[in-house]
Image (cartoon, rainbow, N blue to C red; front, side, top):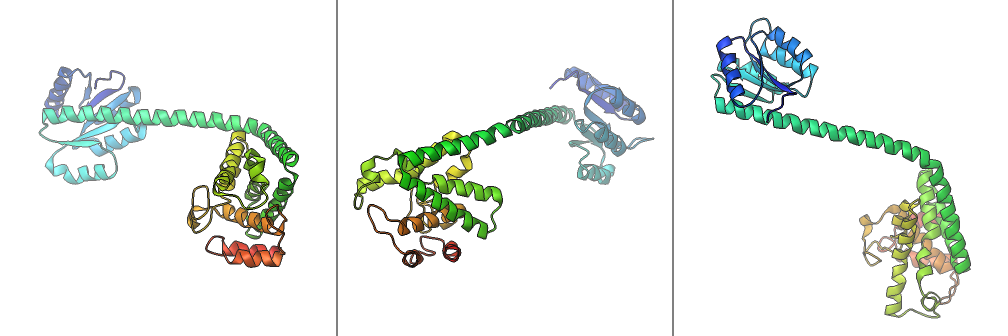
Length: 339
């Protein structure tokens, strides 16, 4: 690759050697800068954009390693190629270990190897510059996004509160019993989460999941939702869809997106027998397990069209039969102590 803006700098104290390399590069379309004085090479790097440095190791006044060290300190994007003899092997290894050189060429120089090394050096430089440019652009985008998010924080907070109130009103108007059930489940999960030492933000997300875990039931037909007696298999398959509907409605609002993931898990069971995805123990979040326990408990102790209300003692006896097989036993234990 030819790049007139980032030129090749040749440094070798042997005049015939450096002129030979210079003529070779000119024949391949490069415009190198050449010097036999290492200290002059330092000045050249300070006043010119250098892309590739080809430097001899053994020189008077300054060693090749010293020139390389200056180059890397001055501009880390300069790609360095070291010309070295067998007697300089130890210093070459040192340069490699210190990350000073991209490649080394043994003397006497093989012309094909040198041209290939320079082409590879420019490709490496361009790849590095492209990567840095992308990172810089990402940084700018990140800063702009952060500023925008900070500006919108107040707006989002108001939107979140408005969305929550709108959903609650919808549930209350459509199904007052479902609304009361949701309020109780919210209270239960708040207490359970607090006993587990959840952070305030996480408690709020779980509480919102408690409020809206059955939101998707509003999309079901009344003959399924209020059926007097057990559901048939077709009705039950439709009932299962309420979990997905609820999560999707919450996601559409955008401002309470984290809550949707918890809602989506509240009918999953540790043994994989739950729905909608048949998740197993370690695949279900702790929040999902908490919501499941609170939801089932409230359903058992509340009179429904398809069963009488249980006492809390009877409800916990029934729940304990599923401890550590379908429900989390540790959560059950904490919840019973709270109730």
